[in-house]
Image (cartoon, rainbow, N blue to C red; front, top):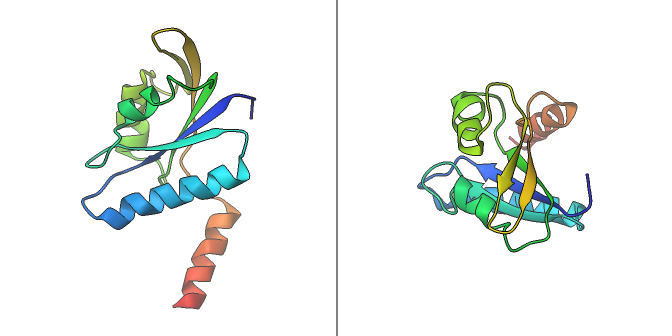
Amino acid sequence: MQENSGVLVLGHGSKLTYNKRTVETVAAMLAERMTEATIKTAYLNMDRPTVEEGIESFAETDVTTLYVLPLFLAHGTHTLKDIPEILGLSDGQRRTTHSFADRSVDVVYAEPLGIDPCIADLVYKRLKEA
């Protein structure tokens, strides 16, 4: 990850307040690991800030590259259509730029969580807890 990086952690959004707290807590845990980056959250539906507001919240930072991380398990309509559309990405495109009033930043759209051994470890942990 580059210097002056920002990460916008995207949650789905929900009427249930604990969902927003979950996204914020995961983002805080990420910030503990990435002390050099600016980490913020945004939501696709129902919660604020919206994705657009989340992006704009980086205007007053020194971020030069903004990573947009969908906190979704797998690809679906939101990750393949809705979020790329908001970011101004064409089909399959992962990079673009966003212009603020005084500068532009590179925007990199990350993959959802997907298939990874750490997901299986978490599933196993939850089964043991049950």
